[in-house]
Image (tube, rainbow over all chains, first blue to last red; front, side, top):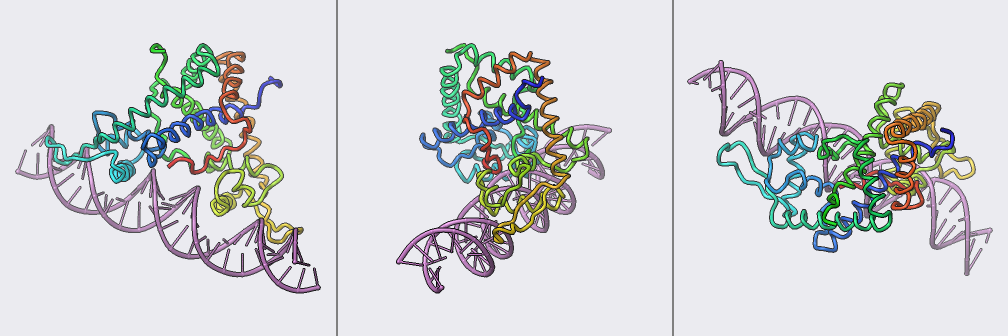
Length: 154
Length: 154
DNA sequence: TCTAAATAGTGAACCTGGTTGTCTATCGTG
DNA sequence: CACGATAGACAACCAGGTTCACTATTTAGA
């Protein structure tokens, strides 16, 4: 295997690919009226989803403590992307829901991601891109949406 | 293109692939006597390199302020992975060098990354993996080592 | 040559996002 | 109906990032 690329290139390229897409997404999102949504906020809003959730549940989804989830929700609330309301069936709970602005950001993100993917397809060819996605599916955990991105660094 | 996978899967898979490798690396690194080196430290040590560097230079390489670079060097120093010494030709500068322990961690990382890549090659086939790497090279910035990973989140 | 600009490092104050521990209010069950 | 489990909030702390300000040294130019 002495002719193989060094192993460290693989994680590097994966990360650069990820970063490239996320940076492009947020540049475009800023252009479309969402300049202050940070990469992490996108993932959090995705995790909140259109049906809403609670801080505890969100923390579990994202793999962080409920307090950390609560703090992030607070900042998202300050930015106008989510709102909280008491659950009438269980007054301990506070349902976190996306505001129209939050839903707009989410919808735009989905469209922009599709466009970015189309850009890659134009460069690589649709078949190569599909192969790339298929290969990645084989070497990554199957339950896609458990990213617990926040804070896994450090 | 209505039959294409949704665009958001691509960044997700790239990130999961990256994360999978990094997590595996650090699990193995911990097993091999380096339990307290964090993912970010690995990138920083890689950026320091075998020849050493300075805080300012390191900051530029990593895309963070010199103060931030300095702080990270401090913690790495506390952990015994780097040491600092004044540059005799320019007494303003302090050269940051990897200690033997730092070099050991770096060497082990390289070997483990190679092994992890071999694992992917066993799953996907060497040709598919090479194709994946080649495709990623085409859609990511060419100058590989400018990751400025620290803090690009948030 | 000598002064002024540029550079290296450091410290302080602050921000974000993470942690754990503690506390209260509410729910649900034995 | 009392007690354990759960939801949320608050505090103290940590890591790593930022900017601003400052000192010490080097370098370049009038």
